[in-house]
Length: 162
Image 1 (cartoon, helix red, strand yellow):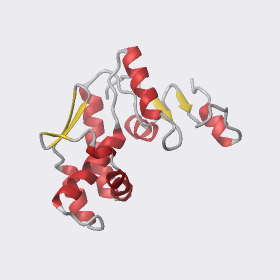
Image 2 (cartoon, helix red, strand yellow):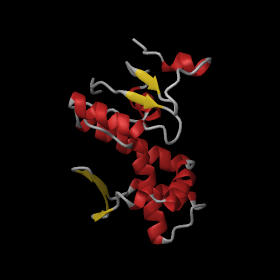
Image 3 (cartoon, one colour):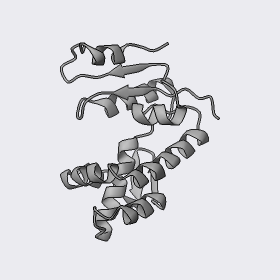
């Protein structure tokens, strides 16, 4: 297995995880994997094809054969720009349903592992980092909306793990 470091950045929705992860990746010269974009891409592909979001087999097949690329800041689905479309409200709602499908998660995890194995470094989603590495990342920070240090179990999770 590749010994590349994985940095995980966790926090609630809309707390700036992606923005921070991209800045960290840029500053350290790492590659960045936006795992949430993969789920959104499956949702967008399903919406474009009229796939029923309750059809787990169809969603799993779609995720397994997803034609998606990340190139120079652009996200492409089936060769067409999808960066803005995957951030729409409809796609956000659909991606939540798609992400709940076990077969989709398995297919996308395989894709994330392939991404990891093909490059040196990859900051991104903490849950993906744990599954990719099957260990805690070296550093894990929890972001909050107001910049306050969380208390209780969340505080323990926000400390660096060495």
